[in-house]
Amino acid sequence: MIKIQFVAALICSAVVISSSASGQEAKSDTSVITYDKEYFIKYDPLTLLDMLQRVPGVQTILDSNRRQGGG
Image (tube, rainbow, N blue to C red; front, side):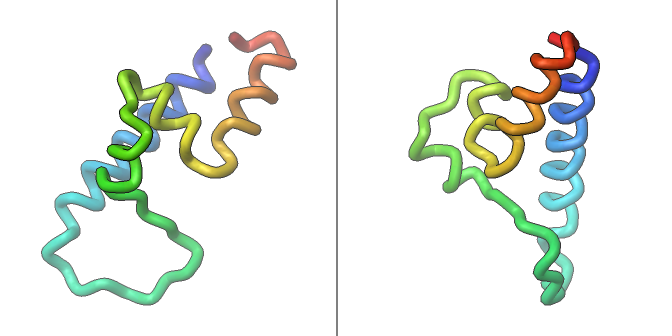
């Protein structure tokens, strides 16, 4: 459960940081992928978990946490 909350907080922080940095010039850092709201709208999410499950790789982290008894 703590790991899910951590991932959720991390993604929320990334959204806040990316929205505040939107006025800055974009750099070509291919190691960072930003998902804006248009990406999620097509999935009609109701909760943060719905959004997290649409980000590639996050479902693997969530599944791993459940197998280890964390949630």
